[in-house]
Image 1 (cartoon, rainbow, N blue to C red):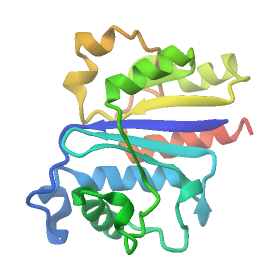
Image 2 (cartoon, helix red, strand yellow; image 1 turned 180 degrees about the horizontal axis):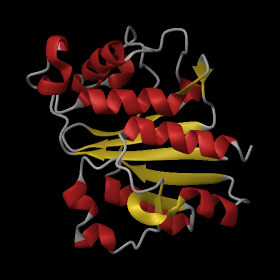
Image 3 (tube, rainbow, N blue to C red; image 1 turned 90 degrees about the vertical axis):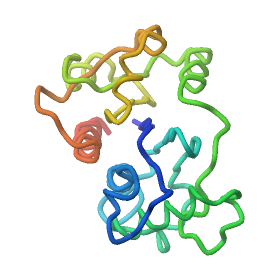
Image 4 (cartoon, one colour; image 1 turned 45 degrees about the vertical axis):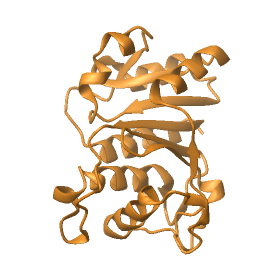
Length: 199
């Protein structure tokens, strides 16, 4: 089962960024970096069944697909990845940063809402949002074993938007990993472990 994780963040702001204080100077770019590592890496290599699309209020939309990234150059820890991300996001032309190890990330001309609408137009039924109040993910997997690809909205860095009338209008099914509140990166790892059992 192929999985595309969707993350929306309104908080990332790199104007005061310094590598000496990534959490405090970047609007929690570190959260994003850990989530990317969890989504794309697996046992010393890229996880080809996993992709990530990030929607950043100040910088746009970016798709991270391991097929277009170089594993030998890819930053494999939070600090190096955050620094490379900062340089990439602040660049006006990401495709001309040949020295950046994240060269290969694709910028999409789509907002979060536009992307959801596009999925709906395509008739993709396998779009879910992770919430503690949703049905258990393991139960959903049992009911939908024939899914080839799913899209999962994770993270709560845009909680106000997720609870807005504009978003709720889509009536996206909610799934849960239980009642405990988990970090986005931990959530991704747990989801991947559960889905790996189906392969």
